[in-house]
Structures are given as structure tokens and as C-alpha cells.
Amino acid sequence: MTLSSLGLLNYVTPSVFIPSLSRVFAQGEKQGWGGWGVFTVVRFLLLRCILGLVGLEVFMIKFHEASECLGGATLQRALLCSLAFLNQMLGIVQINPLLQDRLFLFLFGGEDCFREEEEWTMQHVWCAMLAKRIWAAAVVR
Image 1 (cartoon, rainbow, N blue to C red):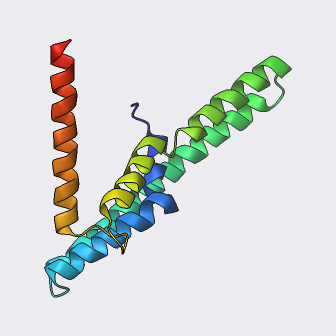
Image 2 (cartoon, rainbow, N blue to C red):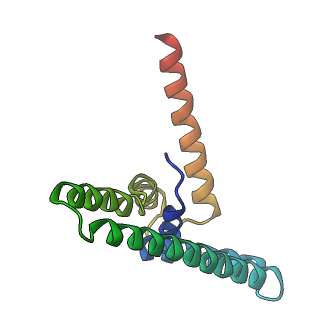
């Protein structure tokens, strides 16, 4: 996995933001809306706003660089710049964690497709058991 400032936009894409927001609201309800629940939601929203603004600024810089590269360039250079920009844009949404989260939601979410504390615990135990079996199989070889 690579670290990119452009990857910060991953956290504000609707497919990542909305499930995370629903989890934070559920956590806020559990903590109570009197104090820490509101703090948790406000902290989440402020952090996502900051990540979105930084990601947008990085996107604008990359877009400006790509547009300057394309202006008056030869066909080969323009193609290379376009492919480099496309590669950077495709890296914004991390597909593997998104698919893994959806798979776990299907497996452990229950009828309401929402994981409660018990279902989260069951998911963590299942992942730990899987890691243990993978480790045991790797050690045997």
C-alpha cells in the first residue's frame, strides 16, 4: 500500500463516508447525545472536512500539473502525462478495504445489515482465527 495525499479523498467518497458516518452515529447514540456522543460526531465531521479540503487541494495541484504537461506537448508526452494522471486518480478509492468491509457486512451484519458490538466482536474473532490458521499453514511449510 502506498501513501498519497491524493488518497485522502478516499475518506470523503460516498461509498466510504456514508457507512463510516452511520457507524459514528450509532456510536454517538450508544455514548449518549449529552456529551461524548456529540463530540464523537463533530470530531468525525471536522476530520473528514479537513481530509476533504487537503485532498481537494492536492487534486487541484495534480490537475494543474497535468494540464500544463498537456499544453503544447508531443503526442507521446501527452499520452504519458494522461496515463500518469489517470493512474493517480484510480488510486483515490482503495478497492480492497472497501470490498472487504462490504463482505464482512454481508457475513456479520445480520438481517439489518448493521454490525452491533457483538457482531463486531465475532468479526474480530473470526479474523484472528483466520490469521492463526494462515500462520500455522505458513510455519509448516
